[in-house]
Image 1 (cartoon, rainbow, N blue to C red):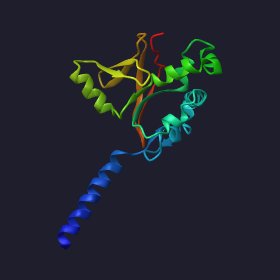
Image 2: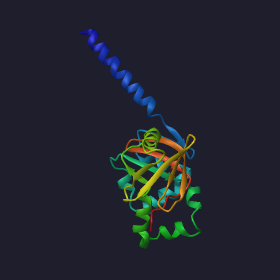
Image 3: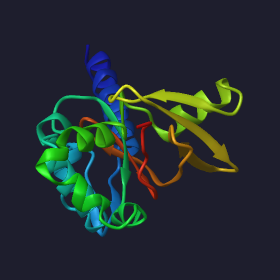
Image 4: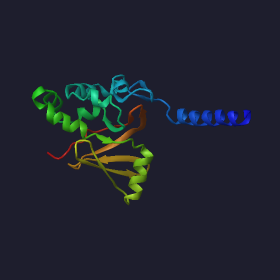
Length: 184
């Protein structure tokens, strides 16, 4: 009986230890992103994502992204938003443009948790491309160049994943360097 109990404890420790190791925290925007916190709880601490957080708040999506999920979020940095034409962010943040803002933000979200390895496997299975259905109803195309992961939006815009696999309690974030835009 003691042997069985010992083996059960040893198995639990091994599984728990591997899970904790695989779910390590990652630094993003000068802040540690904890896998025990949800997407919003982590994102608000990243200095690189203040524009994204402001947009999520203006769009009324905070509660959604704090939900159970799981979600895969392609999170544009402040620099990504800066690449948009001058005045675009300010225009999108106006209350009368909330629907457009919600569409753009949910276009960066895929239902389910897809690690970079999951996406790479889907790309391999798709002979070099993987089509990802977004929460907004649009599609993103994932592809690789060497070991780098890229996402192409419906308008042909390309974004590189600069930090992959930022695990959250309700999904995963992949930091991207360009805002992804759905068809108009």
